[in-house]
Image (cartoon, rainbow, N blue to C red):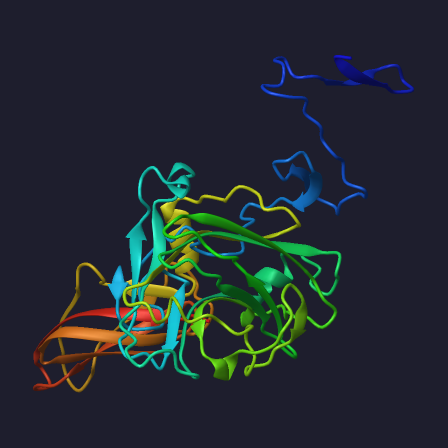
Length: 388
């Protein structure tokens, strides 16, 4: 049979035709979904012939900068927090020597490279000479804004509605790592997963499908809706007995099952991730690659760095007892009124400050430090942060 024909009562026929060329290796079979999808959803395949309904959106990936293209903060730092790849941070407690976070290149010839990934987020461990302490930790975090999830189409209170998390990971130490998702509203709920034992220095794709649950609450606001944590190590003060692949009330004393300390006690051990995608549906689709410009625009809702590469120069001459100000309109509206960090490298009778901060704009002030008619010049850069 070369086609299936469906004849309408009016006489016209709709046909499903077989492919022009024969299947390359074997017969091809597709399994249809067992129920209709929601309005606006499309049929997608999991790559093995299993079809399901999934939401189609202009940007289906709920993770911002999952390909690690954007690094407004810089490309390397031994400090924790947001300091390299935008929207990804690492936190640590109790380390003898700080790990290093970096934006690094994905090596050519590797599978992620052939799939279009050119950057990764990398943690290089320090030398933890005291061993694995009970309160020690090294974790990577990504936080999703609540309203992005609330409006995504995921029915997060239903056990039959799913989101799928997928990512590429590589470790220099062959061990299992725990990755958790924690809701941010109401009584926080946690869902713990694991990578399985990774092969040394080999990129591995991990895919986890997560159902909703009746106790999960995600508000339609600009707060934290979901926190994803890659746990490189947590000491026994924060681990214990817990079920995997199930939602439960968050317990800060038991964040994951007990963890092996091999990675943490290995000097210069490395851990890399890229291609992080969170999408509505039970199927991990191909990674949604965005242009650098589009990814940067999304990142700027949470962080903007003015004068990062070329310092800003403020030149003015004050007349009378007034301090001049410049009104700045952000090119992208920020999540909330930002906090600021000012790095002033030149001060010629003028000191820079900010005021009137809002998600849309800010005032940049130069305060005179000389006479009322003094010439003033300041060279500086400013970081505006509205990170979760």
